[in-house]
Length: 252
Length: 70
Image (tube, rainbow over all chains, first blue to last red; front, top):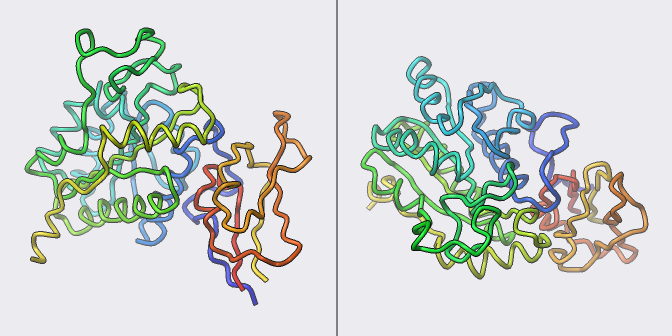
């Protein structure tokens, strides 16, 4: 008798099909979120504000209660929801442009206030939905539609390292950066998401995971080449790891 | 006998799963999707599938809907 070792998570809507481009790691990230929601039994008790960007389609995929937030303000909406309904589990799923560019103030201040929220930020070094413009995380030298000669420090400055910034906030309970380039890293990413969700459930503070993702369409690469780029270029600048974990200190 | 199930309506032919299978049981087939891309096929005549679910973990579109391990 064969045992089912993998199934589509229950938190994913039935007969749903992703609208993402072929090979986009957003699909993996959404599935990991759904798996963690299932494992922690949170599906019926979750409210999530959707962000703007490719990540907005989350409400088409997840079978949970969601509201739409203005661009970058997902964590501001989440703060209101959590304070009005402290018993609900509230998380956001945002892109790097939404979280770290237009929404940087809302995001960092949610962490500084130590809101009991969980946030997931998908870092693909570009604005994917609008056609591959330069984002706050675009690497030095990266050619985009708005930096056609490559990103230069003189004109555009340096890319923001989100997980490190969030870790510096005193209200943050957990901040980590993970990658989805290999199956082993996908499994690590799931553990990080679970941890970020658990710190909220325990009321410890703000939980954050930055996920290094691909954008094969706007990088003009095959999905395989895009994962090579994540490994060889992105992971050198955005080094994966746990940058803050207050639960680890408590155990020592 | 371990095996996987593929939902062909979800496969977008990114072929990320091909390199993940340790037994190389996933291949590009002749069937095409609505975009004209050739879909992935599971071909396991010698019952080599381990049920490791690495293909399903990698698949960004959840086209591999189930992995069954003996």
